[in-house]
Image 1 (cartoon, helix red, strand yellow):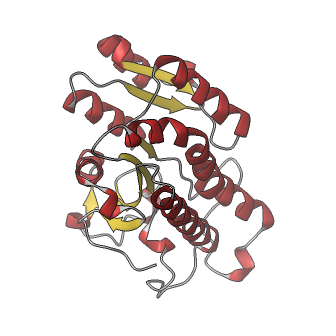
Image 2: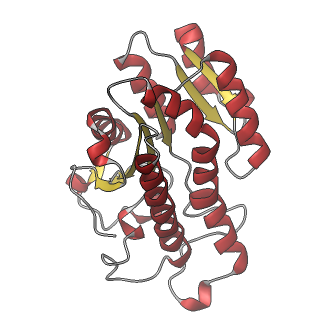
Image 3: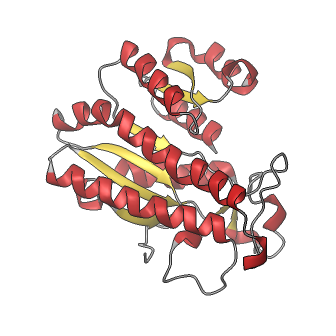
Length: 243
């Protein structure tokens, strides 16, 4: 979905500059092709959300190009990983310290460290404009505690619930300190990606979104958001999700 966000942002705004981050820019051939097509409008920057120093170096690179950011969208997330054996737990017996640590590192800790590090760039924009800067995070409906009727997926659910709490706190701080940054938690629905591929069998065709549709829907929410939306947990159809 991150690549699709980059594509649509470059297409929809003929003047804006886009910063795309990834763990290995040299191996990101699709991003390289977009950079060749759009030139200086696209900057591809190395950022590993599980490495705090990498996040700080990425922020320095962005700061060297621009003094502020209008929007930052956190799309990093993991549900399963063949290399490490991470997969959704169906029962307590499936829980391991390693799985919990990996889920929280990618889904929770990384995104909030990105928020902490890039907040000054966002606040510089928000304080100087009538509309706030937007700090958006891809969460998931399964991170809702009150909506949890099935159980399972312990690590993923817990890491997203923790992300929700952290972002809610960041939103309240932004409002209290008049930072001019609207913090948003977004549920994209079930999207046809590698993350959801093993679990699409029980999803109705009309509820399985293409990446293009999912990103279009989420960008519509982000672009239309104001400070009145700060701290909301929002589904793709613009409805609120219970915590």
